[in-house]
Amino acid sequence: MIWGAILGCAAGCYLLKLAGMSVPDRVLAHPVLRRTADLLPVVLLAALVAVQTFSTSGSDASGLRVDARLGGLAVAAVALVLRAPFIVVVVLAAVTAALLRLL
Amino acid sequence: MPAVTTTRSIVRDGIAVGIATGTYGVSFGAVSVSSGLDVWQTCALSLLVFTGASQFALVGVLGAGGTATFAALTGLLLGTRNLLYGLKVAPLVEWRGWRKVAAAHLLIDESTAMSVTRTSRAHARAGFLATGIAVFVLWNLATLAGALAGTALGDPRTYGLDAAVAAAFLGLLWPRLTARREQFAALAAAALALLLVPHSPAGVPVLAAGVVALGLALVGSRASAEADEKGTP
Image 1 (cartoon, helix red, strand yellow):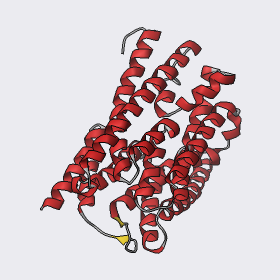
Image 2 (cartoon, one colour):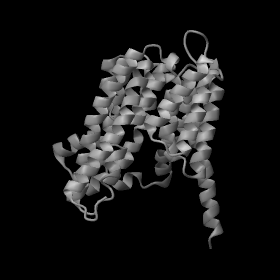
Image 3 (spheres, rainbow over the protein chains, first blue to last red):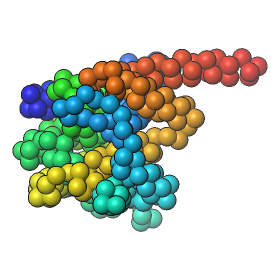
Image 4 (cartoon, rainbow over the protein chains, first blue to last red):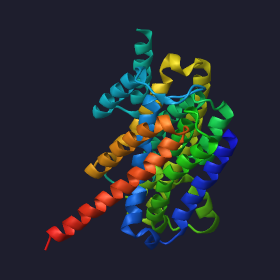
């Protein structure tokens, strides 16, 4: 099933790229379509941040929990405000969460 | 940045961007194996999907227990921005036939950014190819390195790699939160997703919240656009 997701996503993403380089510019001239395409990454990434930070997954029923992940995310946000590079942001979040779990 | 733009300086800039992007690739490789994918699957994603946010989203949804369908759909929706990039890049590079078919795979944030600012077709092509190829090579090497390192580390929770996934999404989101509308849409999507988590299967909250928040933001921005038009005589 994971391979299905990988191949399906790969085919779809490639076709989107090829379509972008093939269709005439005026196809996306409509302002609502353009705004939709601009905002889609924002809403999906924001939802992913929230779910990844608070949701509990696994065999038990899914729910929400505040734990070390929120500390990691807070440090990541501070690092982003300070314009730290991506890899630094990610590593700081991991180290923070790991240290909080040791306490 | 040298005073005179030459093909050589464009290629050098492209390689620099590729090296910088490679560091994302290490994060992706480690995050992917900690989400339950194996090294082969992780490398296949970087080789075949080759668009970072979609790859992070796909492994994030799978790692949270979402189905393959929801994972692929979330990745696909994040890939729609490449379509917009194509519209900008195509008239500048003017590739046809097999060249276009091959170049399309390299169409990503970085190759777009390094080609749309060029003033000639030759420079646009050089910027696109140099950046696209450099990022492709380094992204895939870095993915492999990150995946092997992540496998060696073992249980992701011990090292806070679950928090690293959230931080990676935040890092990808951050540069897009420039305007009030984007900030509102992001907050609405995050809140809606959390409301949905206890009541729906994994993978659904992200997609559903994304679509609803998108609708809200579009209605809001249309209203404000109309208000602006009325406000200016």
